[in-house]
Length: 209
Ligand code: ADP
Ligand code: MG
Image (cartoon, rainbow, N blue to C red; front, top):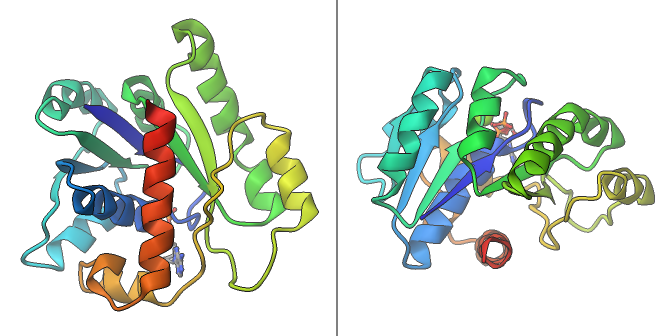
């Protein structure tokens, strides 16, 4: 059992999109998965409610205190994927505490990367008192196809001294299109989106062992 949190207090960084697709991707790889909506906005809940036969189970947590209950719940699954809340408050702190891995999606802009600074400090402070848990890494999301990541983005990420996934998640219509039906890219005919999502899952699994 491993708990993967997808966190970034900045809205629009792609947390919910990545959480839902990552969860489904892990399911496709043969694992049992629970997705946890920890965001009071409830986007993952809305996504889940939009489809009648979603193969992924979802629970919603409204209070940071309830995050503790996850560790016992998680024992029934291979992976728990937590869709993170906006705002660096109790909920995010609680998620960091129970996580084995924190994935930080950032858009390819230095402003978005700088905005992750408090979250990174928080994770590193936790790692110091726990001998390195949770592990953490960035994924650059919403990258416009055909563009290369600017050197300013790479430099800004390097400063944090956390791993950056080789896989980037591309800006593609298929992500919001499938989300609106409560689905994921695994329900669409878009091999590139499926391939990048699967590659991201495999990278995370490799970092978890
Ligand atoms: P967060 O949960 O961090 O606020 P979301 O996953 O809700 O971010 O994404 C914010 C908006 O951007 C949503 O409208 C979503 O559909 C869109 N979006 C996110 N990732 C992608 C992507 N890879 N391609 C296209 N649109 C995306
Ligand atoms: Mg969200």
